[in-house]
Image 1 (cartoon, rainbow, N blue to C red):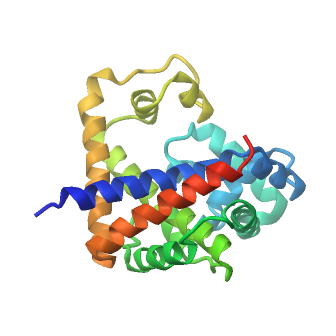
Image 2 (cartoon, rainbow, N blue to C red; image 1 turned 180 degrees about the vertical axis):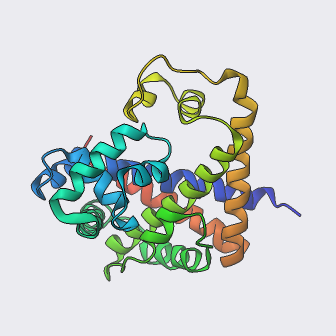
Image 3 (cartoon, rainbow, N blue to C red; image 1 turned 90 degrees about the vertical axis):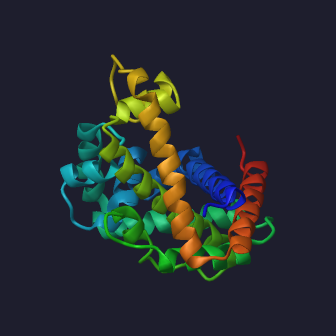
Length: 252
């Protein structure tokens, strides 16, 4: 039997974790750190870094895994990025960037050790098949200090939900462009490398809504296999607290 309070906590945790990861990924400091690490194009550093846990894959394979990005763009950025430090090296650089960002901007947040503890339970218990980015990132060694470790755990949990969502989206028949347009807008769609004209997906709005519900339902099952209802609620609280602290500390 479903528990609406638990399902709501799962949604809240997913939203907070997703937003926190987006702040790190898109922040000018992160892009600047990629340039400092030798990536002339910071987006190539991003693609090679985030996708580096896939190993020596082709650009087409990485584009398939990233899924919601325009494939040719991702393939070209991957090919450019891996020339700098290889796939494994790029992943390590990105992992270290994440740790540094969290140390700088999460240090004042409450409950970081508990966030990491609860998140690690979920990461350890979650299934691996058909979740390639999640499975790759959860194999990376976590930092010892609480801010960096919590930041890394949130990042891995973000990849978990992302992979679950992309599997369901692909099965639904809603295209990436339609998903971007239904969930966001034209500027958001362009950010992922797509060119106009954009299909608005209006005839698939019900399917897209069903994908969101299915994603939350599956994440509730995954978290429920690792945590008690009270722990899921606690994860939502400490994730929201971490996000609030991050947003207060990170310069606009």
